[in-house]
Image 1 (cartoon, one colour):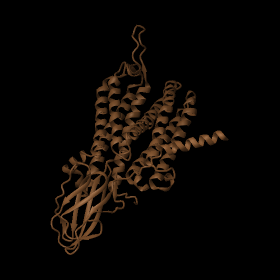
Image 2 (cartoon, rainbow over the protein chains, first blue to last red; image 1 turned 30 degrees about the vertical axis):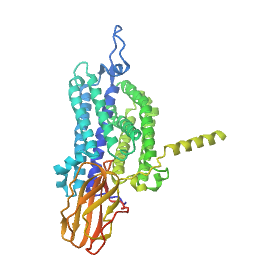
Image 3 (cartoon, rainbow over the protein chains, first blue to last red; image 1 turned 180 degrees about the horizontal axis):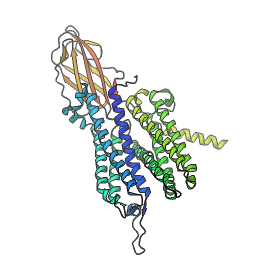
Image 4 (cartoon, chains in turn blue, green; image 1 turned 60 degrees about the horizontal axis):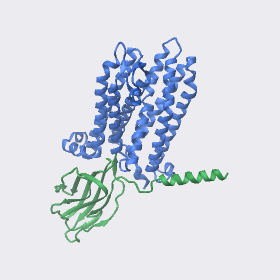
Amino acid sequence: MPFAAGPWELASVLSKVLSYASLASLVGGLLVFWLGSERAARPSSAVASPLLLSLLNRRYLHWPLALRQHLLQLLLLACLVGSFAALLFFLLQVGVVNQTGVAGMFDSFMAGLLLQSPIGYGAGLKLTGFLVAAVTLLLARPALLAEKDARLPVSLYSGALLALVLFAASFAVLGHVASLGVLAGVAIAVHISAMGLWIGALYPLHTLCRQEQHRDEPAVRLQALLQTFGRLGWAITGSLLLAGGYLLTQLLEQPADLLSTPYGLMLTGKLLLVVCLLGLAALNKFRLVPALAGEKVAALQYSIRGEMGLAFLILVLTACLTTFTGPVHLL
Amino acid sequence: MKKMTLLQGLAAALLMLVMHSAAFAHSAMSSSVPENGQTVATPEMLMLHFNGNVRLVRLTVTGDNGIVETGFVPDAAANMMFHVAMPPLVAGAYRVNWTVIGEDGHSVSEDFRFTVDPNAPAAVMSEHGHGGGDHVH
């Protein structure tokens, strides 16, 4: 089937890009908050806490108030845009089914019907995820923006984890992998989570670099944060590629489809962009971050901007991939 | 050299193991009564058979005199087979346009045509495939 790039499809792509970008910004932003925090020294008399609690509990933020405010606003904006995108996607699907123009998007009978389909389940899970995250962030706001001893409350991570589960579930019930079984559902959940942790962290990291440029002392704290991010990067990119690779084998019938079908060609384009992104990530990890001691923050900032550009292209291509084509073209 | 060959064999075996051999497709109609392009006596019922469980959310029948009032009521239940009661049809050409939502949440719209001729035989079920329709994901 030839590509049908009408206004409905383009609007659908827009809603997906906004949704992916919001999800990534939220997940990655929270990761950067965690990376920027430090665990309070435990009194020697304290009983050893379980590993999970020791990772999450009583983590203090030493960032300036303006920076904390800026990042919190970014996360809340991501929740707002993500909610709007989920709603827009659902209404667009109602309009597409009705085939009666823009007014068809607001047909309550059809909307009720689609709410009971994977379209409704998927959009509902995403919307709930963004709302849960927004409420959690608002509840955590006083602790995050406290003048003294600002910290990350455990409730923030509990809410974020719940939101992440809801997002992952939305991708498992709606889309090309929805009918591929449980393992593919788990793979897409891992793929989406890792994607968010990686590319969603880029803008907050860029903001931290900008902050450091205005300081005179060497960016020691930023360097330590980026080194931790780099260490986590192995696990994040590893699980992203492993889950993505598995999904690829499930969606394609044979490797040759990557070059011989529209769907495969778009996947190949996405893979090439991912390779470029990995290249820049490696440059940051092995060259630019170690050089931060020499105050080469600007070079790192420039490289992260490149990563953000590539990540945006990947999101757009993924939205196009799931809108204009599908594995059906392989048959 | 022998080691490389073994590794290559293992890689190929792994690839074959994980490659999905089952056909993977979006929702499509596998057959209908009347079938596409058929000339039949006025059908008492339309039957639509799909390649998997789908939700039939929209169905319109259009004749020379405009839209025909059918007994179709959209339902959230997913099925492979749908029956739609039809009123008596006058002789002429008809187009059936349908929209379904598949298990993966993708909507598919397609249509098929038939002609009513009082002297033609009654419609019977036979397999026929329909090409790709308008897929919105």
